[in-house]
Length: 107
Image 1 (tube, helix red, strand yellow):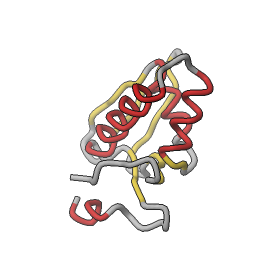
Image 2 (tube, one colour):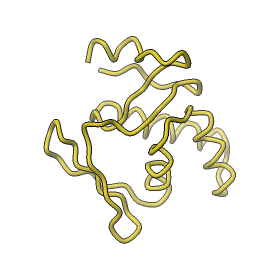
Image 3 (cartoon, rainbow, N blue to C red):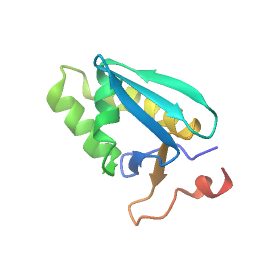
Image 4 (spheres, helix red, strand yellow):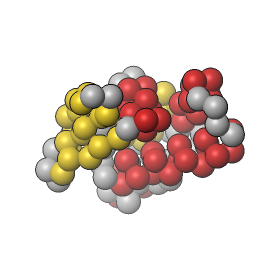
Protein backbone atom coordinates (compact mmCIF):
# COMPACT_ATOMS: atom_id res chain seq x y z
CA UNK A 1 0.00 0.00 0.00
CA UNK A 2 1.41 3.43 -0.90
CA UNK A 3 2.50 5.78 1.85
CA UNK A 4 0.02 8.50 2.70
CA UNK A 5 0.80 11.72 0.83
CA UNK A 6 1.93 14.83 2.70
CA UNK A 7 1.99 18.46 1.59
CA UNK A 8 5.52 18.04 0.21
CA UNK A 9 4.76 14.87 -1.75
CA UNK A 10 5.00 15.29 -5.53
CA UNK A 11 1.99 13.79 -7.29
CA UNK A 12 1.25 13.01 -10.94
CA UNK A 13 -1.16 10.82 -12.89
CA UNK A 14 0.24 7.29 -13.27
CA UNK A 15 1.28 5.86 -16.63
CA UNK A 16 -0.95 2.82 -15.95
CA UNK A 17 -4.20 4.71 -16.59
CA UNK A 18 -6.11 6.34 -19.41
CA UNK A 19 -8.49 9.21 -18.72
CA UNK A 20 -11.00 11.27 -20.63
CA UNK A 21 -13.34 14.19 -20.10
CA UNK A 22 -17.01 13.26 -20.27
CA UNK A 23 -19.35 16.24 -19.90
CA UNK A 24 -17.19 17.88 -17.22
CA UNK A 25 -16.45 14.65 -15.38
CA UNK A 26 -13.21 12.71 -15.56
CA UNK A 27 -13.44 9.03 -16.41
CA UNK A 28 -10.29 7.08 -15.59
CA UNK A 29 -9.53 3.51 -16.62
CA UNK A 30 -7.01 1.78 -14.38
CA UNK A 31 -5.04 -0.36 -16.84
CA UNK A 32 -3.75 -2.65 -14.10
CA UNK A 33 -7.22 -3.58 -12.81
CA UNK A 34 -9.53 -2.79 -15.76
CA UNK A 35 -11.83 -0.74 -13.54
CA UNK A 36 -13.34 2.61 -14.55
CA UNK A 37 -13.31 5.40 -11.97
CA UNK A 38 -15.12 8.73 -12.15
CA UNK A 39 -14.42 12.14 -10.69
CA UNK A 40 -16.59 15.22 -10.85
CA UNK A 41 -16.51 18.73 -9.42
CA UNK A 42 -13.37 19.51 -7.46
CA UNK A 43 -12.08 15.96 -7.93
CA UNK A 44 -12.17 16.43 -11.70
CA UNK A 45 -10.25 19.70 -11.33
CA UNK A 46 -7.61 17.97 -9.19
CA UNK A 47 -7.26 15.30 -11.88
CA UNK A 48 -6.69 18.00 -14.53
CA UNK A 49 -3.93 19.46 -12.37
CA UNK A 50 -2.25 16.05 -12.09
CA UNK A 51 -1.29 16.05 -15.77
CA UNK A 52 1.95 17.66 -14.58
CA UNK A 53 3.86 16.77 -11.41
CA UNK A 54 2.89 19.05 -8.53
CA UNK A 55 3.29 19.03 -4.80
CA UNK A 56 0.24 18.38 -2.69
CA UNK A 57 0.74 21.87 -1.24
CA UNK A 58 0.55 23.39 -4.74
CA UNK A 59 -2.64 21.43 -5.44
CA UNK A 60 -4.15 22.64 -2.17
CA UNK A 61 -3.24 26.27 -2.89
CA UNK A 62 -4.74 26.08 -6.40
CA UNK A 63 -7.99 24.59 -5.09
CA UNK A 64 -8.17 27.22 -2.33
CA UNK A 65 -7.74 29.98 -4.93
CA UNK A 66 -10.46 28.56 -7.19
CA UNK A 67 -13.10 27.39 -4.70
CA UNK A 68 -14.70 28.81 -1.58
CA UNK A 69 -13.57 26.21 0.93
CA UNK A 70 -12.03 26.18 4.40
CA UNK A 71 -8.27 25.53 4.15
CA UNK A 72 -8.23 22.73 6.75
CA UNK A 73 -11.20 20.99 5.12
CA UNK A 74 -9.60 21.39 1.68
CA UNK A 75 -6.35 19.86 2.90
CA UNK A 76 -8.13 16.93 4.59
CA UNK A 77 -10.31 16.21 1.56
CA UNK A 78 -7.38 16.53 -0.86
CA UNK A 79 -5.18 14.16 1.17
CA UNK A 80 -8.05 11.66 1.34
CA UNK A 81 -8.67 11.85 -2.42
CA UNK A 82 -4.98 11.48 -3.25
CA UNK A 83 -4.65 8.57 -0.82
CA UNK A 84 -7.58 6.81 -2.53
CA UNK A 85 -6.15 7.46 -6.01
CA UNK A 86 -2.73 6.17 -4.91
CA UNK A 87 -4.23 3.04 -3.37
CA UNK A 88 -5.90 2.31 -6.73
CA UNK A 89 -2.64 2.86 -8.61
CA UNK A 90 -3.99 5.87 -10.53
CA UNK A 91 -1.36 8.34 -9.35
CA UNK A 92 2.34 8.20 -8.60
CA UNK A 93 3.74 9.67 -5.40
CA UNK A 94 7.34 10.71 -4.86
CA UNK A 95 9.18 12.73 -2.28
CA UNK A 96 10.62 16.17 -2.94
CA UNK A 97 13.92 14.65 -4.08
CA UNK A 98 12.13 12.72 -6.81
CA UNK A 99 12.37 9.26 -5.22
CA UNK A 100 9.26 7.08 -5.01
CA UNK A 101 7.60 7.23 -1.61
CA UNK A 102 9.14 4.54 0.65
CA UNK A 103 6.00 2.39 0.64
CA UNK A 104 5.77 2.60 -3.16
CA UNK A 105 8.64 0.10 -3.38
CA UNK A 106 6.47 -2.32 -1.40
CA UNK A 107 3.38 -1.84 -3.62
